[in-house]
Amino acid sequence: MKVGDLVMDDRSHIDESNWFWNAWRRRGVIIKVDGIHANVVWSYEGKTWEQCVKLSKLERLSESR
Picture 1 (cartoon, helix red, strand yellow):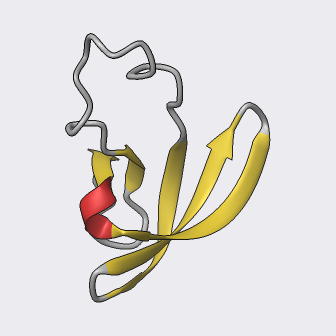
Picture 2 (cartoon, one colour):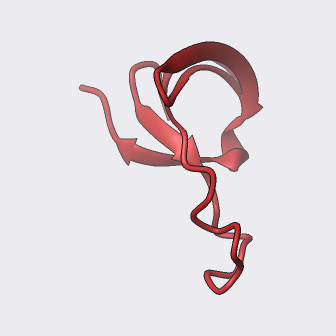
Picture 3 (cartoon, rainbow, N blue to C red):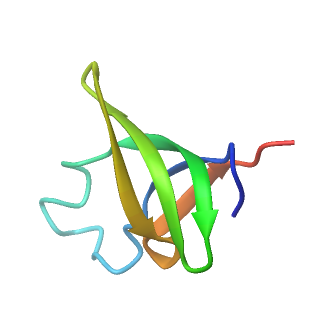
């Protein structure tokens, strides 16, 4: 993954029959990548915030050019 990619939380570890599987779907843009971590600006219900997240915990929705 690289700067500018559109990402969301990776939910592959959650069974789709789990009631919470679709309860929390935030989307973000990677603004910085440091080895195995990335700084992501998240957006959810009109609010935005920045968070450092492990790359393995992210799922790429769209790749930047």
